Image (cartoon, rainbow, N blue to C red):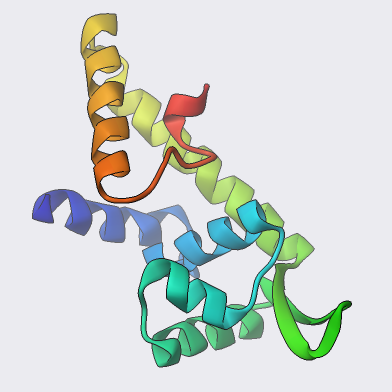
Length: 138
C-alpha cells in the first residue's frame, strides 16, 4: 500500500506539473459536489483546516478555483472550479484513465472483475463508495 501511495503521488506530478495528488483530489471533490466550503473539504478528508487553506490558496493563485458568496447566506464563501480548473481536471482524469487502461490492458477479464470487486470492498470498508471518474465507471 505504501508503494501504491508513493506511485500515486509521483504520477500526479507527471500528469500535470501544477497539480499535486491533494490538489487533484480537492478539485475532483469540488466538481462532484458542485462546490463547497473549505471547512467542508477539511471535514470530508479529515485534514487540518490550515492544510486545506494552503491548498485552496495555491489553487486560487493558479486560477483553478474561485470563491463565491453562498446565495442563501452571504457570510459564507463557497469554492467552485473555474473553467481552467475544469479543463485541467478533465485532462488529468483522462491521463490517469489512459494510464490505468495501459497497465491493465493484458489482464484477463476475470482478474479485472475480481480486482474491481476488491477495490469496491476496500473503499466501502474505508468509509467511501465508488468515486466518479475512476476507470471502473466505464
